[in-house]
Image: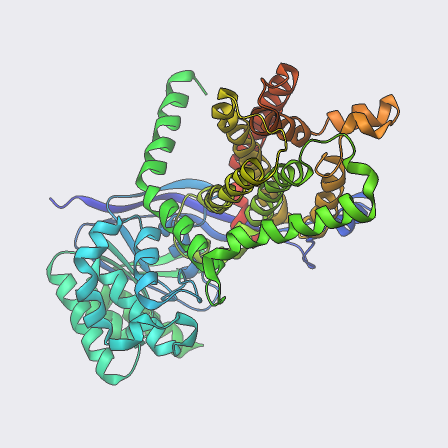
Amino acid sequence: MAKTAVKVENVSVMFNLNKEKVDNIKEYLIKMVKRELRFTEFWALKNISFEVKQGERIGILGFNGAGKSTMLKVIAGVLKPTKGSVEVNGVIAPLLELGAGFDMNYSGSENIYLYGATMGYSRKYIQERYDEIVAFSELGDFIDVPVKNYSSGMRARLGFSIATAVEPQVLILDEVLSVGDAKFKIKSEAKIKSMFDKGVTVLFVSHNTAQVRRLCTKAILLDHGEIIAAGTADEVCDIYDKKVKSK
Amino acid sequence: MNTASKKIKISAYLQNLWKYRFLLVEIVRKNVKLQYRNSVLGIFWTFLQPLLTTLVLVLVFGGIFGKSNEGIVCYPIYLLCGRLLYEFFTQSTKRAMRSIRNSASVIKKVYVPKYIYPIANVLSNFVTFAISLSVLVVMMAYYMIFTDVAIRITPYILLSFVPIIILLVLCTGIGLILSTLNVFFKDIEYLYEVFCMLIFYATPIFYKVDALGANKFVQMGLMANPLYSIVSMFRSCVLFGEMWNWNHFFYASVFSLAMLGIGSLVFYKKQDKFILHI
């Protein structure tokens, strides 16, 4: 039996919603004295549990505000759940907003090492993959230019190349298959497919059921912070499509 | 929580720090590299900046307001010692303060131990500080060779790393506290700016405390400033060639370690809430 890659247990996430953002001491004190520091509780995720086995590819579906992004943040370890726990075995590569860890004044090649270190890899490890990353990103001579002068496509290409070159065990894909131009899109899909063959575990967030059916083995459907359907990709996509039509 | 699970937690913490040591190194490297990029003189500013500001201070306090330098052996060196340490203190704590907010884009997307950012910013300033210390060496050599000022170089100069280490601990602690506060209240940035100005005058950078003739309370107030103790220790070793006053040593060490303790605790308790505010 395959090992568990991601285990989500009874996870709930609560946000305090206050109408105005209080971010200075004066306002905070005034509101505290006036007893206006009231918050409305908002549960973005309510008691979610699921398990992803190694090599499984799971699609996460849901309408806007269903809690998909919150779910991914919890799994990526960025957001701590209010209740429950998440267990991840292996290195996660969150392919969300590619290039978020770049320093704009740093050149492309310098950013490769910085981004690699952000993911927990040593300079030596990245050095071994450096040529591959540069080749895949197709940046050529632009690699020595500060990233602030890059186009958004170039930035995303470099981010994608680094994040996939380090051979992560768990891949979080958030609509990233639309990186760059048509040519690069084909290339990046092929790269991700080749990672599938190596048995990478995938968490894929999308609104596109056709894509989920094509790429995923399983799926879950979130609505208002709860799992309302879970099963094979086709089953869940059918339910989702039906819900879309009935709206 | 029982002690056994506490132990496990601490070792897990250290393991995590070890895993992310590359990130620490990369951020330090980045900050040092980027600091003077696109400036014509580049790294030379590390030497030039303290030299020029010291020159201004010498002109102002040694010339125009000429009283403050009375009874100080080799005033420029005296000034430079104080200014170098002060500059490291303010620059590193200011950068650490902004570090969490500045790294918001990363912290929101990828898991990284967040304390890496304030610590890396203090360390990168420490690197530039260490480089700028060579200005002190050159200046002292100049004064010893070309003038007959009585600078006493004794084996105590080898102990000058002690006040520097204490200062590093102090900056890390205060940096952790400030970076946490700054996530929740951005006002801290403006308040701290004023506070640094206060520290500049409250640390005997350009004057001597006993030459002030101030009353007891003012003197006590000045003594409460840990930077005063650290600067005094540093000057004892480097400039006066004598052992430091042990009261200074104990006060500065205890104060700095307490700051580090408070800083780590505050940061640890609040770090999970950062993402909701940045």
